[in-house]
Image 1 (tube, protein in one colour):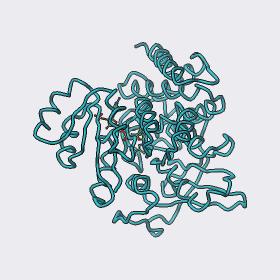
Image 2 (tube, helix red, strand yellow):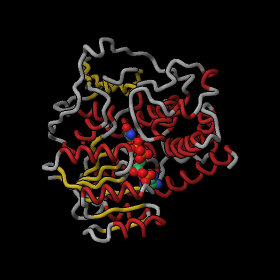
Image 3 (cartoon, rainbow, N blue to C red):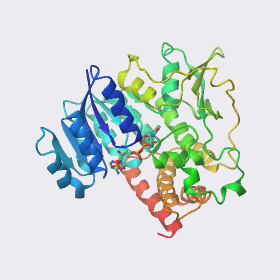
Length: 383
Ligand code: NDP
């Protein structure tokens, strides 16, 4: 029985993780759930799963949640600091980081320092501070299990291969809703179009990141840290059907891939259940339904964010942190109709040029970099 804390239980990954836990009551016990502001869903989840504790990050909802759960034996906390405290509870074995964005960094650090195993969905944490996080995980003997489908695929391909060096990995990308479009065509795409992903149903931020290929850029950096790769060992190929979730090439030239229908419950379940493969009745993949699996080069000139992510990784230091902060501000502005689709890349590029570069950042440097990049990005938007 693994005792699980889910940071971000009300989101896309969080609710799918609860489906996995609901279907496997003999394997998992839910200890902690958290939300930012969706108090009603958090309360409903608490009443169903009876966790030990819940956290609502936005203080103003505390009283509402507390009253709704007052007759239950469930501790109710509020505030960002409480997210870090609950993951340290002795009754938690594993923390699923399913919050979105930079806000996931600090609770992840606290969970690692408390020796909790990590199932990592919150890729921004590794993008911002991959070196710090992986070093901390080593120091505290904590394993980080990938939840992202591509990284889960690589992790699955590595089973039984841990002593065989990786020659390279190939991350697959669906290409998103704007695959094949020209820069001219992208100038006027709307947020409604960008939010319509062809294969995956996800939270708003990652869906926009998928449309701009930023998501693939973040995943490239995430892969570097998860699998201790050199930059030149990471390749991206566009695979519009999202069936081959990623591939690993070994020293003999042989390539292993992991395939499956695009359903996040699979990688979530693999991460939570590892090393076991728990049984499931999710729909099965059939080649007859997908007679053609196709692959193509990503268009780095049109989808500049992916190139910018490669550049940030190459530069290292706090550059990926700058990229991430600028992107969070740019995506939010796009979702609020304050900037156009292509302007998001302009904001990233400008912040990467302007924000102070630090080659060997400390935790405090990341915090300051994040603030400075957000300020710069907001100024560019005119906020
Ligand atoms: P959602 O936007 O659907 O959910 C985000 C969750 O985090 C919600 O529970 C939200 O609470 C909570 N949250 C948001 N901001 C804060 C904050 N500042 N403090 C505390 N809690 C917060 O996101 P997704 O589930 O789509 O994505 C979560 C993470 O997983 C991201 O890092 C994403 O890149 C990654 N991921 C997602 C995939 C997917 O299929 N969705 C696939 C692979 C990776 P509330 O509901 O109250 O707002």
